[in-house]
Length: 451
Ligand SMILES: *Cc1c(COP(=O)(O)O)cnc(C)c1O
Image 1 (spheres, rainbow, N blue to C red):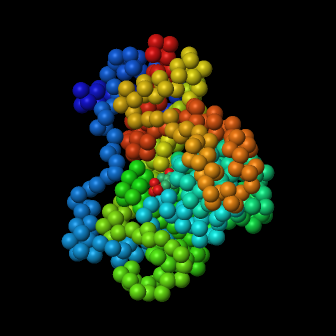
Image 2: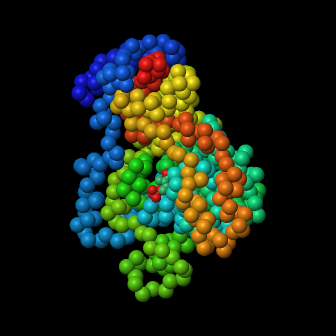
Image 3: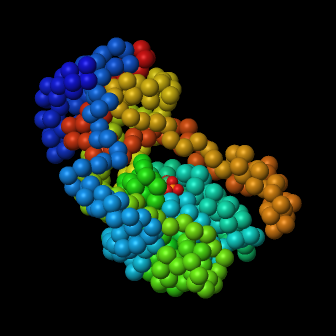
């Protein structure tokens, strides 16, 4: 069935022409909308795409990727050595920083960066509520207090206008998250940080090779943190990195990732002199081999996602009830770990987001509603009840109801209710696929009362 539906979709040749005219601004959406008198899959029509249509993630190209990996496996050198070094120097070069240190995952990259900036018990870190739980867990792992500044509803990023009022005497850092792989408003954030003497840590775990004003994100603040988890735009399975231009800071992160042995100490050493309390969170050689294989593709894939996202947004913006995510003017490239738009059921005859998502999935389009409100969950309450928090924070600061009030973020709550996410592999599809997505949304809109 998959094949038939794909062929049928491709047969709708007029879509291609419409896309071309559309891109050249000759058509408006209402004309393009008449292209599809199709029965939506949600009402029994055949789906636009087979599940197997989209690029399988992670990608593995046997002929290109396997040699370095198998050489590394067969060599028996599995602990950190020259492949990890090579990956680190290539990633530093890709991001445009002096240095890079790999670690076991993005969460531990964040934990280590925060820790090596001497942020801990009694300190506050301002961050965004619209993020993956790891950003917040990394603050808590250092016994610091997360403080939330609400988001900009158009870009989904932390809103600099809401950030400054959150600064107190305890504030030590801003943890900026480039959520969905799209750069935050870095000029304004950096100038607030400078004014108040705060460190800026960039959570770029979704933002590989995204650019703000021509600079790669992760290279703008004091430290940039990346994730190479399976779903990410540079996947290793697990893996992470800290990048920085501050060599001393990265030297310290290196020691922190290797039992406190100074940077340069061979990772086989068992009897060296250690100078700090530390963990051991090293990447392996075979992980670096996988990373080196993936690294070759990221630049081109990032460009494809960026171009397809722009094209898709240009079509979706003309559909009533759909508002594609916006970029700040200074964003020169989005990494689009996810593509998102806001969905307003009122314009779809009251069709709920959940039903809308189901209808898209029935067309063969992988999608979800994204994050739920996270910072009011049990893990926060339980952390506040811990012995260490009780000894470093006042009763008032740990009053959870009070905390939720102080950190209430209405824009974030609204976004959690109406966001629609498409996964990044969808953006590696063709322009025709992007036209198909816009067509699917219009078709659901037209048939909304029946779905
Ligand atoms: C994935 C992710 C992390 C954590 O990375 P892991 O490698 O999964 O530990 C942190 N922050 C954000 C925004 C992420 O998306």
